[in-house]
Amino acid sequence: MTLLGFDIGSSSIKASLLEASTGKCIAMAQYPKTEMKINAPQAGWAEQNPETWWENIVKVTQLLLSNPDIKAKEIKAIGISYQMHGLVLVDKNHKVLRPSIIWCDSRAIPYGDKAFKELGEEKCLSELLNSPGNFTASKLKWVKENEPAIYKRIYKMLLPGDYLAMKLTGECKTTSTGLSEGILWNFEKEEISEMLLNYYGIEKNLIPDLVPIMGFQGKVNKKASEILGIPEGIPVSYRSGDQPNNALSLNVLQPGDVAATAGTSGVVYGVNNQILFDKASRINTFVHVNHTVSNPRYGVMLCINGTGILYSWIKRMFGENYTYNELNQKAEEASVGSNGLLFIPFGNGSERMLGNKIVNANLLNLNFNIHGKNELIRSAIEGIAFSFAYGMRILNNTGVQTRTIKAGNANLFLSPVFRQTLSNATDSIIELYDTNGATGAAIGAGIGCGIYESEKEAFKNLNIISITRPNKKTLKETKNALEEWITALELQINNLKSKIN
Image (tube, rainbow, N blue to C red):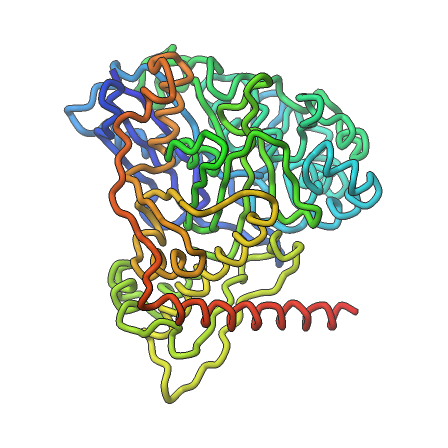
């Protein structure tokens, strides 16, 4: 008996097959091998074609099932993880009407800012726990205003995971955690936010019906069965945005638990049982995957757009002949603090934790006589770690403590320099686990369909790979470099304010 998990990232599609009885991952696949393209028709825009996601789902499933030891008939449930905040629009025939406006697209910021002001900041924060900002609801408003012909043809608006579930089951559905990430959820009343819909002039019937986050969501239909080569009738029993799902994969489910990721973007995600918000609207609060009205669980998330995307840029520009592991090794050869070289990594659109400002990336203190490739690579890694530390101060001020951070053994957490810098900069213990988003989705599917009787049973085989603690020998140097980095960042922010004024 196995469980299948899909993870729709902005870089690739991943799939994992879990042996339900042991929780062991018996097969894993990823497609494509190179990063999926993010299209930018205009500055600040970011789009991907959902049909490309489906094509890659088909290919990754074929790769997964190509192993003769894997038997598709043993798959008992499917879980879905997906890139958050994206907008997918389909017509009544379930055809995609336009490319998805994905998470890092910033075109809708003016709409969200205006709504925040006119609806009232206090009202938005108490009901939505956030500004409508640049999230899914505001992206739909942008379509209504700028592409009215497309808007008129909309049957349902979907999040990326809802789209995949639709392709699997033939039904358009969504979840409370999905609507909360789109700033479409009334936390006070535990229902769709009619306040924001009415303000934006968006018809409520465009929102799909709700299904449980973990529970029966539909069955694989005949068409999907034939395309994917899996049995018809397999239940889809879990879906979640990638960050709540990452928390699930790390067994971050109870108040005080904290998870982190450092892929294309960086995230710190803490769980609380109380409704929290940041008055400056720099963090997000979501309905967490195990939330119930009687036992509330909320995910408090800080997102940093400019993190791993900087490291992939470094590789493209300066390290094409190196693997990421070799880049990590070169970073270790440079000293702590990169000999004064500072890299501010915010070059991937607006940064919510900086008040939706577009600061852009900056390389500071470059000296041609003393800085080489090793310092450049290390300064990028340190800059990313410092952006985490800067953001975690915001989380700490809202009551989320980050003394122990759980993370998957992937992306930048594979770098010893990143782990040690982050540990030193935040005085945190970092625990690494052998898990990933697709594996988490498979576990969620097992909980959702009742194969696991409890969360404790589902995670009984989750083991720590390594632990990183603050290093007394390099602690002072790291702290000094962090403070210099923060000073440089705040100078950039002040210069930006001066230009605007």
